Length: 261
Ligand SMILES: C[S@@+](CC[C@H](N)C(=O)[O-])C[C@H]1O[C@@H](n2cnc3c(N)ncnc32)[C@H](O)[C@@H]1O
Image (tube, rainbow, N blue to C red; front, top):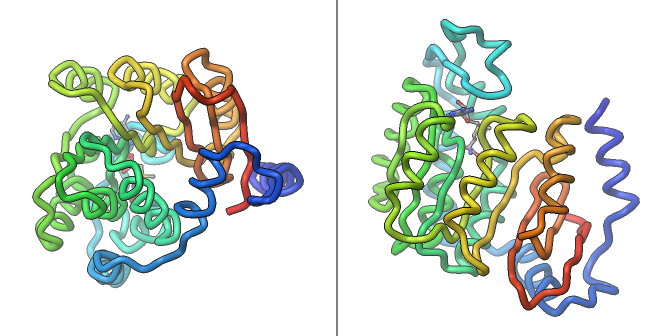
């Protein structure tokens, strides 16, 4: 119910390229966001998705995030195919992330929340010279993701296993380079989302791009999104309903956009 009202609000507020006065956002919207082209890597990744969707394997899942109350401390038994259906980003969104990486050419990409590694694969395939560091708390889910990377022969992915509360600050502290692109898709709660945002921001630069998933998934996530929009370091935000894009470019006037996607 919450998401239905959130979608209605978004629908009433959002527009398309007409009347978009920011050349930066207009170019991004018309050439990257709305460009539904097919790239060579897509078919192999989607073949792996089909394999996971057919899998009858069950694994014990430990959830350190918003689902932790449901799974319980000892974890819950879940079918791999159910995880592939419900946790992984749909091809359309994962392919949007591919196009964003392809467009901005980030050297260092972080993904908070790996799951089975399908979106990681899109992030990694978009620029083979980038380093993609992906974080997953559940060891059994991480093992499935490793299989995804091996099967797709992705050499530019590093999977960091463990609770983001500990692994994210430790990994960021050890990074020799700044962070160019971050996809936030783990632990969909207000406080951790803002904390991870601040931690990544400390290693970001003016041209870094942050993408937040599920910004209208719950009241808490909407609250986190609203707090990020008014953060003093943020200049431009783009609400695409399923994901929110955040930019820190100092040459841009401060503005929030709602765009149909
Ligand atoms: C929505 S799924 C990620 C989906 C993935 N990005 C994709 O599109 O295929 C969220 C993942 O984040 C992991 N996660 C949640 N909270 C976490 C935490 N505090 N530390 C590490 N991983 C966490 C969960 O185990 C889950 O696999």
